[in-house]
Length: 219
Image 1: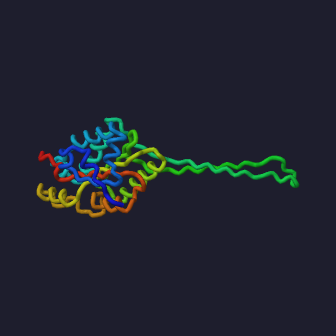
Image 2 (image 1 turned 90 degrees about the vertical axis):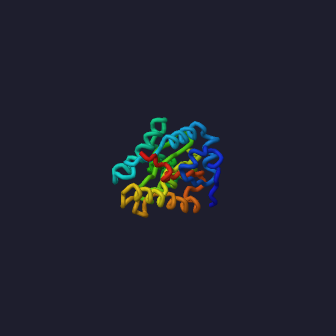
Image 3 (image 1 turned 180 degrees about the horizontal axis):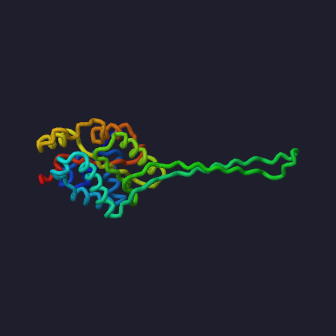
């Protein structure tokens, strides 16, 4: 599946300078035109976000705080965690066999509940996950959820906020943290892009936004 670049036309230069983006099916334009309120809130969160020195230098705990900070920014704007479950009801009707004395059909009904994945944030027609430094298998889970939500006509697009790798690691080294983002099996744009191009999100337009070293505030 080919990557598109509609984000270049709908995001301001101030955001494009600080974040790396990838998309399929013109996701940014889809969100901007079909969900303008949610797009405006996404834009506001990206404008307001920055990486601090503590984010880079404090091991472990503060890396989790980055995702919490972003999720809180969306929750404050009315976004909520969402889970899409499906319930399949099967009905078997057995015809009456009169030689055996049966007079009425017998109806047997059974229900199976399929519990779906949770999405970090859902609002309107958009689903959004924050994957700063989790196991890269989370990318498959999120894209699978977007695909299911989209197939069920619950969302029109999905957004994933993740990070770049090499430039942030270099920033960490410059600031004095020798071991920063050393693990290659965690969520980042390099891991996400091939999943997008092989169509892991199905027919769902998906926008990937990567936090870069250019988001560092210097404070």
